[in-house]
Length: 115
Image 1 (cartoon, one colour):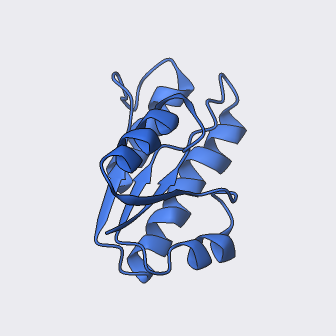
Image 2 (cartoon, helix red, strand yellow):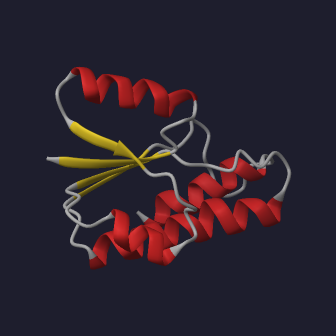
């Protein structure tokens, strides 16, 4: 099983990568921009599972949240479908609801609905 992890250098991502490697899984980090369709297409070749952890963490920056988190997730999902990725795991946040006062939680809710 080949696994691609977005956000692999973040707090959660580092732990996930470490655990996957310790467990003997063939996992690699995605280093490109989440909004780059061509890079995504190349990286998804031969991938069975995607673990999507990448986030802008855009505290109050709605434009960044829209571009990176929402548009990026949409592009990633589209590329995963085209590449026939078998499993897509999205790690959200507790409290992710559309009417949240925190823009990041609203963005996470939007992505949950896409998945």
